[in-house]
Image (cartoon, rainbow, N blue to C red; front, top):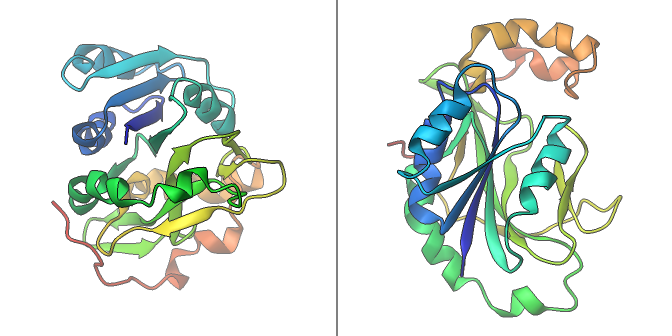
Length: 229
């Protein structure tokens, strides 16, 4: 089964290669779309595109779901897609086991006429907060549907925190739970300034979090659930 990497990025010169290196070994094609970087990200992508077999596109950024859908146009139907962001990476266990896991997915699931929802792999999504020794399960959802089978009319909706859908209003997915130990690691909240700016961004409507979800004092640290490499 073909696996495709899809990465949208913008002004991620210091982190985009970390993301790419965690996905490139397991994908047949890797599509990257830059939204108009001004910090040299596009130069990095062009410099390493042959190393990681990247196909690089440019498309002015409007909003998150539109950017993801624009890139999804390039992924062939009938393939699995790893849709990942520049401040994320697959952990080592997921990278090592994903192709074998996908090859074992029942072929009946692909063509089942009774399946009315996108077929996804639910993978834990872990935010690193402030330092590398303490993190908390994501308040964006304990499992994340960033790995999915590209068929029918599947596309993204809901602006910032995008959801996969076939039809408007129905965000249900047919989810296969990832094997224990898999995770997508999210590094953005190691940036202290981002945490400090969060209340202001919420008030201005730039992020669709509830204010209480940014109160880190009420979010207990969880034990390390994964093996990191």
